[in-house]
Amino acid sequence: MTVARLRRPTHLAGTALAAVLLTFAAPAWAADFQLDNVKIDLGKLVINAPKIAIKGSNLEKDAFLALFSGAGSESAATRAARLTAAEISAPELNLVQTIGDQKQTTTYRDIRLTDIRDGKIGHGESAKGSIAATGTTGPMKGELKRTAFDALDLRQTARVLTEKAAPGVEEKMLPVIGNFEQDGYSLDMGKAGRMSLGKTTARGFSAKVGPEPLLDVMNQLAAAAEETEKAESAGKDGKDADAGKPAGKSEAERRLGLSVLALFDMFEYGSGEARDFVMTVSPPPKAGDKPETVDMKIARMAFGENAPAKSGFAVEGLRFSSGPAKGGVDSISYSGFSLAPVLRELRAVLMEPEKPLDESDFRRFIPTLGTMRLTGISIDAPPIIAGKDPIKIALGTFELKAGEQLNGIPTSLALTIDRLVTPIVEGSGNPAAKDMIAMGIRSLDLSAKLDLAWEAAKNEIAIRSLSLGSAGLVQLDASGTLGNVTKDLFSNDLALAQVAMLGATARGLQVKLQNFGLIEKLIENEARKSKRKAEEVRQQYAMIASLGLAAILGPSDAAKALTAAVSRFVAKPGTLNVAASAKSQTGLGLADVITMTEPTEIFDKIDLKADAL
View 1: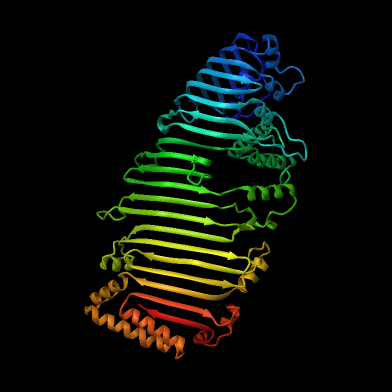
View 2: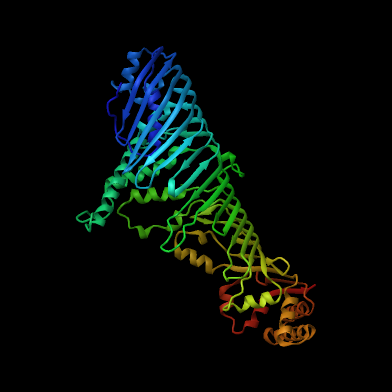
């Protein structure tokens, strides 16, 4: 049988899935019967099933055919809810999708749906499948392994696709697919390369009815894409496609924007993972260059409960190579990230189309940042200078964690960089690198940390940790407190934020400098260049520190303590500790510093302790 052309949706992949489901389940089938040559023509998507067998249906065949044709006043969701059958099977199902001059045919084989009750499919499975495509991008073909799912709610799916929520009504998020499995696929893209994916699993996919039917939104997006293609084509022909159109966004464009934003609220993706992604691509070479392939592998991609943080997204075991260059990342992950603030502000902008965009506070468009983490980064690249060693860069850990945000600005921030190993590359215009190599420093093993937070109850910013160091050379650690930091610092009023920033005061600062061999190397390098003994240079530096600092800092007790500690540290490099605190309970502010006539007056306003070990 041939079914009349149905309402035309877009060519988006989601439409194809919806059409497949409706092919099998939009009607209700009679007890046991067979349908031959089923065809659904959706314009850019045509679905063909040579044979469909139905067992244990709750309706007679004629009733099923009436539901399948869509005749009558019943909604698609109502019809879907009446479906009950023991089994629905088909040896083959073809989806022919056309996008421009690109034509793709996807074939699913040995399809079997079981335990269909009241519009819910207990289990569905396709044993295998294939993909073939032709067009300007070149021929493409591929193979699909087993695909299966559990607990598919056709009624809710139909509601999301065809219905819209009543004004002022917030629909509930309901499960649509309980579990999904895809055992893998491989894709040959011809000259463009190859791609394959291992087993993919997912669970807990949910959806709710939005302000516009999903199919309508997809139709609007397709129409907008066609308009864009026409405009680009007109531009190539030297025509101004926007000539004569009024400035600004039309009401239709505004409504489309709101509908697209609503899509982000209509779905919850649950949890899942995909393993063993492999891709080889061959980008077109530049004129005169040899073609090179780019190889990439990902051991695992996970989201939701399957991610290490039990939320967010993660990529594990990433490896890539191109010619002599190669690299990898053990893990890339994020958690706590959310676009909700961005979506909220975009809606507000669309609701006030006449309001100038430059009047918007762009800090409100900052997403909730959460935590981003990278581990085990390594890159090997060819040498910059012929005959030199290859470039090797590595990073143990990079982590950025943002706390609760006010007007988009995090009230706490923690940054960790651990074991960033980078080579010292000698060059004619880099004398510092030459000195470091002369000192035997061929690479730097850097680590850094920043941990600060605003404490609302105290109106303080606590700098819990600020550190920077290189293994085997030097380490600097500091902490401190800024006072009189009010909530105005996070205000969306820029003038208030500036006043709050200028009103901040320094209350305390602690600094520790540890030498692990850098100062000895500096002294030895200077001795080598000046052709003196290292001990002579060390004594000279100690004298300069003692006399020079005393002349600069003045005769106050605090200045003497600092001079003595620094001089001892230079003479015998170990650990230098400095602790300073404002004498005033309110702290040392910018106004206090500006009114000083001499820099040494700072010692009259602070208590300072210093020692060298």
